[in-house]
Length: 134
Figure 1: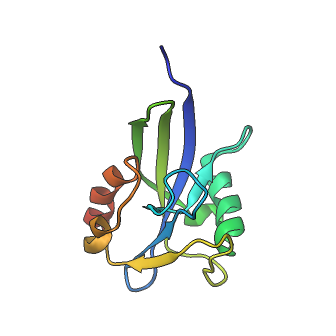
Figure 2: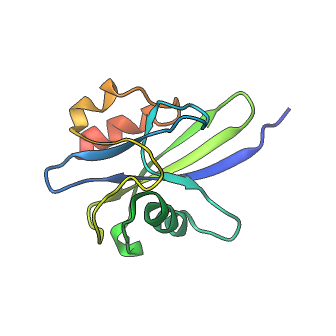
């Protein structure tokens, strides 16, 4: 039986020191306590870039322009009840200061340390492309 497809867009925000931002899923959400790249579900009528611009404003209080989002890689992962497709974009420029607006913990992480943060299964395959790039 086919599983529903869920499209989620994620961003690897990279600071001037080459560190990547991770957000910890808060209590009460699925996979609470795991670390992930910021982003969210692509809503009907949205492009992945539009989703990231909206989600990064809502979750982190920053403004990102479409030209500052560069596609890097994607993950395709079968969970028990759905299949997740997640493009990962690199973003090195934004306006504003990153803040945790939804009560989540945030961490700026050196690329070689990304594997030391427990992540959802769909996020883990994205790490090698980031490490190679950075």
